[in-house]
Image 1 (spheres, rainbow, N blue to C red):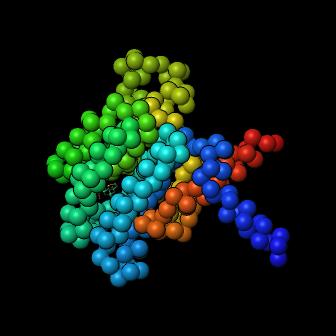
Image 2 (cartoon, helix red, strand yellow):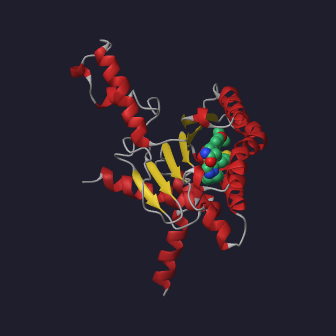
Length: 254
Ligand SMILES: CC(C)Oc1ccc(CN(CCC(N)=O)C(=O)c2cnn(Cc3ccccc3)c2-c2ccc3sccc3c2)cc1
C-alpha cells in the first residue's frame, strides 16, 4: 500500500512546475485545440459557449507557456469548414478574435508576446482582419513568446504552394534544381523562420493530424488527451511537457 501511495505521490510530483522547470522545455509547442462543441453539448449549452470557454483556455495556456519559457506556441483552432456551421455560429466566431484581442492585447504587449498568423488571413471579414493586423503590428517588435495562430491553414496546400514557388525559382534561374535540399525546401514554407514543433498536443480524444504541419512534425513528440479544449488546464500542459521530457531523455539514451 505504502509503495503504491509513494508511486502515486511521485506521479503527482512529476507535474509540479518547479520539477518541470528542471528539465528541457520544448522550444516550440503546437496545439490542435479540439472539443469546444462537445464541451458545450455535454452541458446542454449553445456551441458558442464552448468557443468562448475555448478562448479563455487560449488566454490561460498562452500566459502559462510564456511563464515556462516556451519560445513558440502554434495554435490550430481545429474547426470543420465554416460552411457546415449555422450562420449565427460563424458570425460569433468571426467576432471572437476581436473580443480576444481587445481584452488580451494589452497583456500580450506587457508580456512581450509577438502575435503572428500562419495561413490565409485575407479570407477573414474586414473587421476581424483589422483586429488581427493591429495585433501583429503592435507586437512585431516583441521578443518573448511567439503566439502563432494557424488561420485557414492546410498543410498540403502549404507544401504544394512551396513547390510552385520553388519551380518558378528554378525556371527563372534564382536557384538550380541541384541546390534543392530539405533546408532550401523548408525556406519556402510558411514556418520558414520558426523551428519545427518539439511537442504536439491534441485535445478531445481525436488521434489525427487533420492536415496540420505535415512537413514540420516529422520529428515531433505527440501527446493526445481526451480532455476537451475548454477543460484543458496548466496541469494538463505540465503533464504533456513532463511526457516530452521523459521521451527526450530516452531519445538521448541508446
Ligand atoms: C490573432 C487571433 C486572436 O485572431 C484570430 C484567431 C482565430 C481566427 C480564425 N478562427 C475564427 C474564425 C474561423 N475561421 O472560424 C478560428 O480559427 C476559429 C475556429 N473556431 N474557433 C473557436 C475556438 C476558440 C478557441 C479555441 C479553439 C477554437 C476559432 C477561434 C476564434 C477566435 C479565437 S481567439 C483565439 C483563438 C481563437 C479561435 C481568426 C483570428
